[in-house]
Each structure stands twice: as structure tokens, then as C-alpha cells.
Length: 214
Image (tube, rainbow, N blue to C red; front, side, top):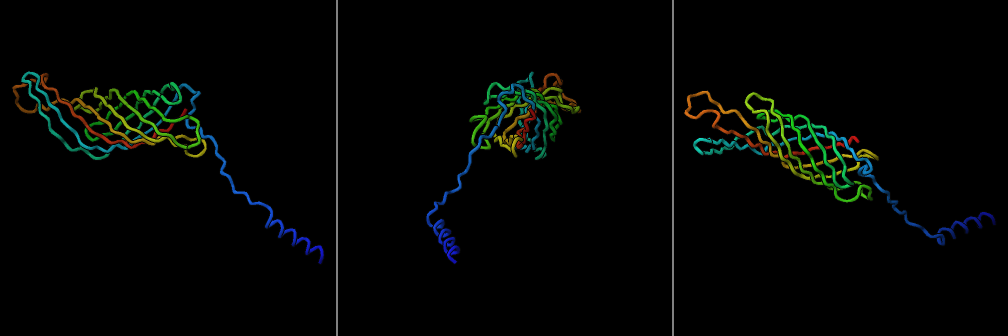
């Protein structure tokens, strides 16, 4: 009985006299970019939402110009592979190419992409923001298009760390596609085809994912 009373008294003493400590959150460093590697390889794709298309027809001999708008399918897509160079932990330049599906004509884009990532490559957060700029030619595959067109795109996004090591860029931006078309000469016209300049400008919103492979 004496031993039991002593044990109970000891447990009660621990209850009232041993201090309670709060659990502390252990912060760790997350690697959002392998800044020591100079060369990069990335794979990505996007869903394209068309906001409209503008047609511009110029008659060189007369000096006339006609603009008119045209509706397009609201959806399209792009997938691409990129090879590039990392200047530092914030600036990456890549050359990207792939395949773009679009209502007026499919194309093979080939463009330079410049990305600027904010913050440090190694930090306490699992994400960091970036902006990008794309520009270059694209090669159309349809019979009604001249072979060479162009694109310009700009936007921003978020690099996130999915799991422990997998990195992913989620982005959204605006893209302008320029397509040179052959004019329809089915009727009788007093203007030769060589004096007609016909271009289409497609306005797109892109929502995509880019995965750094290396």
C-alpha cells in the first residue's frame, strides 16, 4: 500500500510540475531548380482557347487594306520539347519545337523561350513565380497556307514541387499566331495574285504544364 501511494504521488507530481512543450514545426529547404546544371531539357503541353481571328488583306498596287474578323473553334492544343541553357538560378533560355493543333491550320512551331524565375532556387517554400516570353516562326502544314508564319507569346506561372523531387511549371498566357494565306482566285479579278497580301492573326489564351526533365 505504501508503494502504491508513493507511485500515485509521483505521477501526480509529474502532472503538475513537469512542463509541457509545444511541438515545433521543422522547416526544410526545398530545391526548386538544379542551378548547377547549365543545360536543361523540358517537355510540355497546353490547351489553347481561341479568343478570335483577324483577317488582314492588302492590295499592294491599289494601296487598299481590308480588315474583317472571323470566328474559330474555341479549342486547340500544343505539345513541345525544349532544349536550353541556364544562365543562373533565375534566367533560362530554351529552343522549343513541337506540334500545334488549330482550327484554321495545324503547324510546327519553332521558337525561343525566355523564362525568369523569382526568388531563390533553394528556399523554404515549395513554389516560386515566373514570367515567360516566346517568339519565333512556325511552319504551317495546310495547302491554303504559305509555309512560314510566326508566333509571339507572353505570360506567367508558378513552379511547384510535386512530391519530393518532381518539378512542374503551371502557366497561363496570351499567344498571337500569324498565318500567311493564299488568296482565293476562283473568279475573275483584275488584281493579280502576286499583288495580294493575305494574313490571319489568331488570338489565343494558353493554359499549360511544363515539366523539366533535366
